[in-house]
Amino acid sequence: MKKNENMALLAPYIRVNNRQRNLDFYEHILGLRVLHEENAFAFLGGHVAKETRLTLEESPSYRTRAVNGPKKLHTLVLKADTAEIAELLARKIPVERVYKGQTGYAFSALSPEGDRLLLHGEDDVTTLDPVPYPDLLADSGFNGLSDVIVDRLVLNVPDRSVSLPFYDRLPLSVELNEAQGADLQADNDQTWDISMVECSVDKTVDLASFAVICKDLGLETMLNKKETVLIVTDPSRLDWWFVK
Image 1 (spheres, one colour):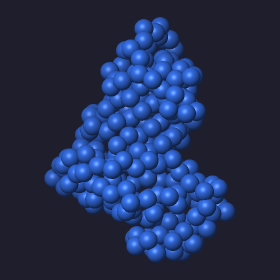
Image 2 (cartoon, rainbow, N blue to C red):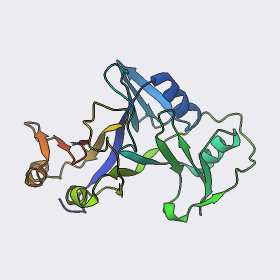
Image 3 (tube, rainbow, N blue to C red):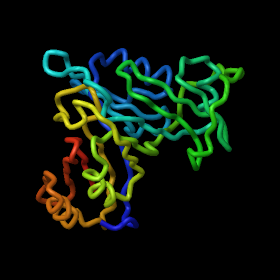
Image 4 (tube, rainbow, N blue to C red):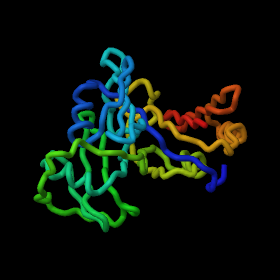
């Protein structure tokens, strides 16, 4: 698959223990909105755009458990309007760290499950520098982020050399961080962690050819008959859904 083919990160799926605690975090700290809920799933996005950007799946403790060691999800990087990010900070929300870039403020925060989120509005996240928590004036009419996109995923993997042959073929912003942990290759239905990533794919992308490449890499694949949905399981047992 060539780097110039059209593909975008759409929505990661994260398994959680307590859905309501996590929804409170994503709504009140990250400024997202619950677009709708269906069975164990909650779909979140912006208050105006209303496109699903993150999906939480409540997975009870009798069949799922906490991660032993580092999670597969190192950092989920989200991009939004910097003026709206400043509005969140004006409410003195609890965050891990505040940053300042060329266009405005950014911050990182930890969810109740220990997932790290970085919310920024920069063209280049390397311009972000840590700064003290700013003293900003809140706008009483602010209801949350109008829209947000998944800008980047940082994943923990036990061996980058094993995962790179697959990720080097993805025209997506995914970074691999080498780490050691007992659950970095656990089945994606076993732990409270990222379990799946949905990507939107342009109709011109040849998913059948990409499926062959992934099979040659020794990865599990499943392609529907219409060749519009391809599921690939990476070496860390994380599922990638490529959907036209």
